[in-house]
Length: 282
Image 1: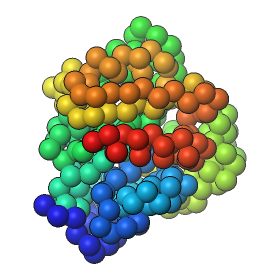
Image 2: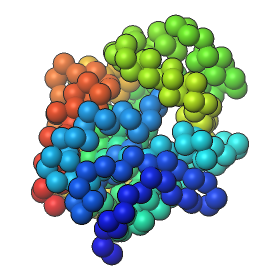
Image 3: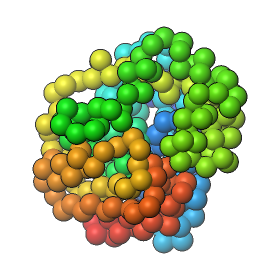
């Protein structure tokens, strides 16, 4: 399939409408950029111009729970398979193959697409979060379990929503403590809380019991780069080091020194370099 030369500002799947930031050369190879929690497509704003300058077209969707037209009410509607299928629909609309990039939860979705639909993935670049099986394995044999404490707290109905609604409250303070820049905390306040996207973002965590476990242990067959930062307070190195065992294709681990979890906003040149290097290797 050829890449469509019209801009994709939105698309639909199963009756839900997803907003998309489409920029760069319309005839360039497509890079799909997947945000994590608690951010939206704008988290890639410092990265995309660097990709455009190298001739790539970028598609950054506001994913399920974040786009106003794609906020189903049930937890099971946010299971990983649904999130993966949402992005697969975008790639198919954009021509059928793309360089897939994800940060945080977006990385988990990117891994899932590469596992489920390798025919749609030219290359994979995952920021911060390792292959799902490597991540789960690290939960019991490293500090990852302690670093993921908030995942359990998010399961308590309405608690995290109440924390998020409080300006300069516990959630804002946690984000700042994790290294999020003041401007990005303010963006969280306007784009996530005020925009009504916080319940949908939290639903990704609450849907974990509905994860299809048959995906665990399956390997990725596309060229992959894993990017991890040594100042990441959420992701332990143990899971990252285990990723190589789950990729049966060219693979590279890039470690960013002195960088915290928020790589796309705080280390945009390094993020773009990793994406470009992997894409050009295809």
